[in-house]
Amino acid sequence: MTLDFSILLRFQDALALGLWMTVKLTLICVVLGCSLGFFIGLARTSRSALLRAGSSIYVEFFRGTPVLVQLFWIFFCLPLILGVELSNLTSGVIALTLYMGAISSETFRASLKSIGPEQLDACVALGVPRRVQVTSVILPQAVLRAVPTLLSNCVSLFKESALVSAVGMADLMFVGQNISNNTARPVEVLTVVALIYFVIAFPLTRAVTLIERRVLTKLAI
Image 1: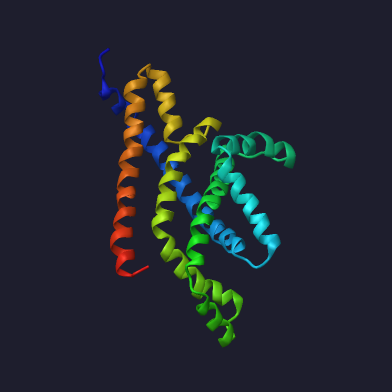
Image 2: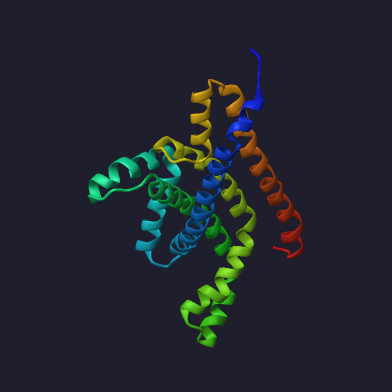
């Protein structure tokens, strides 16, 4: 078999659009998922047994079931239950956000537990409202301690986003599959698609190590 990677030059614009869709989807779900994960993390460390139980069920469910199954259920089943149409983009955002929320909540829960109780006691003594405690005292420290693991979660989400191609969303993987089918060149096309994912994910993975070793060590966290 003769390999011919030059054929992909004809489809570079399509691959670029697919990559942009993948990056855009990942960024949206990272922002929404991390925000959700922070509040779920707060709920898991709450004094309320009801909040702890509800948040634990959510986390265990979305961490314990395949993301592809979650995506299919939201795309095919949720519209039947709600009686509304959901686009593949909306379904992908919901599924990946819920997944990101579940895995990032564990990161935030660990970072929240590392914050000394004396800081919250000081806030109470000073009469600081709960909302201000969360936004000005708890959130900055929790995010700082959680940065390395959150970056790892973001890299994982970027790779998991390839699953949205299964519901017809025109991400990088979906575009690559279509080009592969049309050109009958699966080796060249899928190899390049894999390399694109790697070129983006690998530097982010190295950045996690750099941040963990240099920044957090200097801050003595």
